[in-house]
Length: 219
Image (cartoon, rainbow, N blue to C red; front, side, top):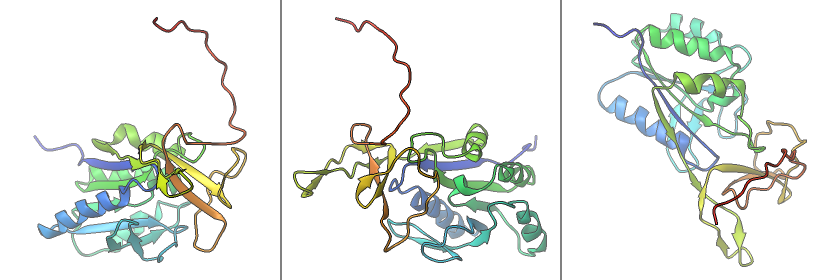
């Protein structure tokens, strides 16, 4: 019996969790066995190059930028391509509009595997975007990567180093407010930086307080 669709593999987690590197490793392994891979990236992410996906931990791959507001343009790109495609990859999937999920479903139903990487949470600790909420249930192989907490200890000579699942946004070295825009892309030379943080050291000023529940811990 033939497959109804191909698989979707996802690598998600906070910043500095090497999500992109994990995706690039999978791409490289596929290409080493003769498979053809096409990598897409959001056009708003030009930190390194408009046509290159690069991991902070090393590794890079040529990529095709796509308008995040119009992911349906991917259909035109694929229809014009004459070479075969075995795997289509998406970097920073969270930046694309939710319509990209339908594109991904169509791709897999055409017999092409999909691999993606992205942030599952924003700096506020919320789901990064509706796109993440829609793609996770469709993912057949999901890796939730962790980073190491970068909170400085002992006068910046040591970092916390605990498992980090959160992304901390800093403005001039101080935690950014919950009221700031959800998406601000870090660029060299600006006052905006990001770190991976554990839950103990993740700080978001003005974070809405939930109603507390009275409970009785075990004695």
